[in-house]
Length: 285
Image (cartoon, rainbow, N blue to C red):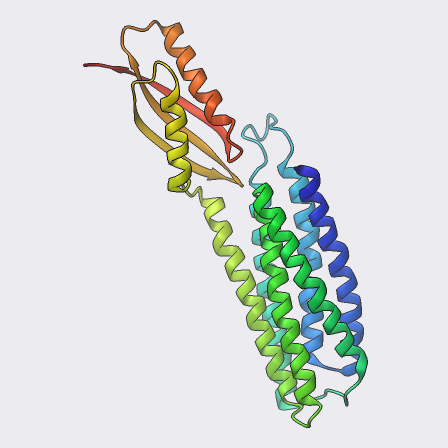
């Protein structure tokens, strides 16, 4: 699992470096703020990819004396960095786009920027699909953030593409308008990533479906009469679970402990669960 997630992060980094270089070149040649904005977006992606790449490696490290519950929170932290970078990039693009509306500087139409944007749209479409598949399979919030970002990159590149076409017909101020629209998609990507990962960092409870599955597993254990409580909170991309079981009050401490361990072993097998805390309470008729 770790290798697949790291591979996805590496692929994203290499792809975004390639796209940044060709888009920046095309933006400079055409002097289009829309294309340059797209290049800035790719630069933001590169910085984020570096953070994601190292956070994924950190998140799969085993627990140690300084991080006794593991390093699962590393991925949501990296995803939040993506949101911050998106905000900074968006502000930069809007400021420059306004100046380009007032005083358009885009050059006459040339073929190279169109070719670059078509390459970007095709590559980013594939990346969005690939990252979504990987993030769902391995439950990685950082890779999920890359998927959302890639999809927004497709939309922003489409805007830049049509901006070049419209500007070529004499409406050169539309290049600046397109830059502002692209900034909107940059902000939108950052917002969605931040919103999703705040839940990770704030310890959101597990879904009702997952809670029911945990409850069913606990009740399957021979000796568990009932549950008196079940709580969960998200820690990184996994959950910590606290379950209170009712056992016969006449059981010995050893027998009760054995039942609790069976409950824990069944629940911790679930890929969504990082740790389980089982509390024993006596059942009184």
